Length: 315
Ligand code: 13P
Image (cartoon, rainbow, N blue to C red; front, side, top):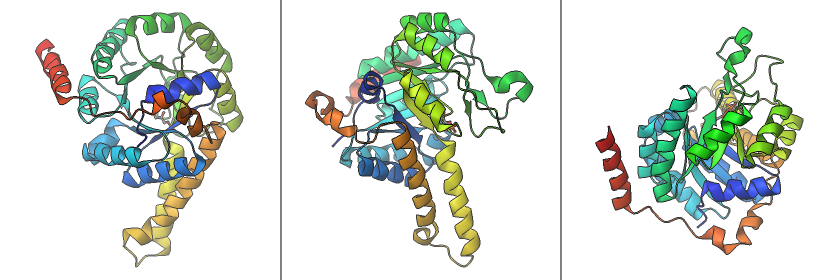
């Protein structure tokens, strides 16, 4: 019964200089693999669902992940990754996720701040933690001659952003890019991260955690990164495993024959990441403080309804 708040997980990781892996749940198999490996390594984990993944699997996936979390023997949190707008956040709150990201970082600073504050004001009413992004994490489709879309987070703006919005953790743009890098383009700027950490003194989140040198990830964790988001590194090998199985067993079609090899490949990557992030064995830290282990109760539906009505009223 260890569904916990993502804030509980990340705050302690920040204090103790390790990071929680936030792994994207691309399908229900992923959720099961992530929790199995977390239990094996006694590590807390965050199950992250991106809106595209949410659209693909529907709200029922959250019920399934919630059940996995509730029956896990290690602390597990459920997190909405890259919520695009208030509607994505409301869906996640209604489905009882306990942490959300609002990503309006593409908007001008003031508008990003206003949209984020609106989400914090409603999410905190039911104890849902909020992550936001300032600057821009790059993306592999952006032009190389435009620094792959990277806009590094500025420490002064970040301090104003955090103070005004009241967010719980901040996704910082320090050189990573979502997805695999064209060769040689990974470039985590530890100086910028150190400046942000010195200024903000709060848990920072590394998006685009895949395809970076292990040494850089370790260094980033030592300088304030308390949550590392991983999507590509668990998806690419998984689907390569599926492709290999399809090609090597052309007459087979049963899921229990087609997926176990890919599951094993993914579980091995998950083990490596959890060890790299220093979160192996840290579940015990949370069990030491019974306060952390109060199971999260379902948010009272009248409060969730109230939030949704308030939001509709204000539109
Ligand atoms: P990667 O695909 O680079 O691992 O990025 C994942 C991510 O940041 C999800 O929010």
